[in-house]
Image (cartoon, rainbow, N blue to C red; front, side):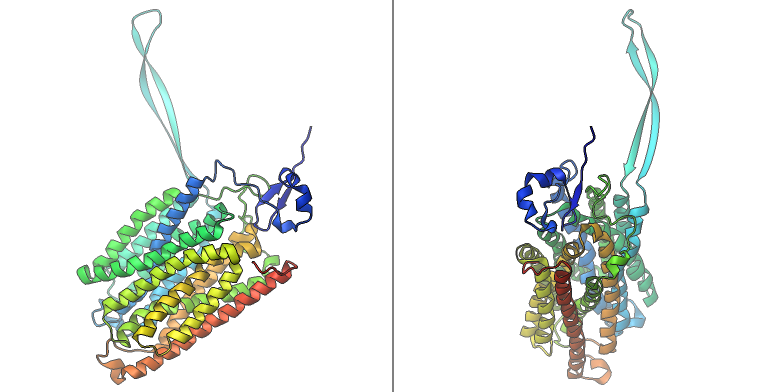
Length: 510
């Protein structure tokens, strides 16, 4: 007897068999196809304990990867100051910020290469065998003899684990090699290219596979994972400033590099390839087929293009406060470098808490709704609080921007799943991260060009120019940053409307 099994794809991109649908057939007939219940992930593959391990590993990974990226402004402040070990970049904010932008941008845009690498690279296996003599006693005599016995073992390493581990190693090498830099181009090779490529291999596998192991609490899980970046920024800002004060830039980079690799070993042991059933029952749901690029039907959708515009603009605008918060504190507010590091730390800590709360809020009022609100409010905080502020208003900006800016970063992966489905998640996600990387490379250097060359802390005052002139230049940077973020918010709103139109109905919770 032959049994037929049909599968139904839900709005979450997971699949339900006929048996699942028939259990609630009368109720399901009256509902839209997108609301069907998904097949549970096989219990031997995804357990609650593994979900907890995955969240903890993801938090540690983002703690280092994004945490180090977020405190590059402290590196920039040091490199462009009179104490710099790079003699040819003092006051050259545009050139030095480009180093951090390339490194941070490659963290995301490098996924366009890491994604097909994850698809095409096979698991690596090693086999070995050995012989030993085993003493046996004959049943009929008291004599004993020996027999040669052969045994073999096989070791298989998940390709995702290997990519993650190699990425952590290359990323750490970039930091360590940067400690020997004496010229600007040394930084471009090490703290930009080498660090960026390694961080992408370290960051992308876990961040792209983690959402597929969660369903109802996906927003909360991703919020916790990405909250690690805020905690990382909080801790890294204080640790980095302390290392700079105690040991100097060279040993600060070496310590960060070794520390990063030791944590990367632990993360690599947890991460693994996607284990959800695909449409054929044995593949990975959400893998999006063998290609890592969106197909033509996806690229014809307006949601895809406006989501891409939003990703580019938001990434470009989001990085500007992170890179120039420290230099603004020292150059315009004339506060010490320790205070500037404290501001970066506060911003990162608030951002960390916000990502978790934004994830919880998104699970209740809708992920796209929360994304829209966070993007608009981050742009308003830039215009209202960073434009010609005194110290108190600047502190308010540090806190409020930390609250709102974390929403987009935490919720983008979950909204991609909702708009395009899990079956297209990896395809769209890799492109969005690539575009966000390009936005990062574009955002801060343009702000540096607007700002121009200047000296720090009121000594020399921008080659004869006073603090008030420098404040006006920073106001131009603020306007540029606010426009980028506001334009991104408009695009996000339009994506929300287009998605409702494509699905044929408007839902307030989406």
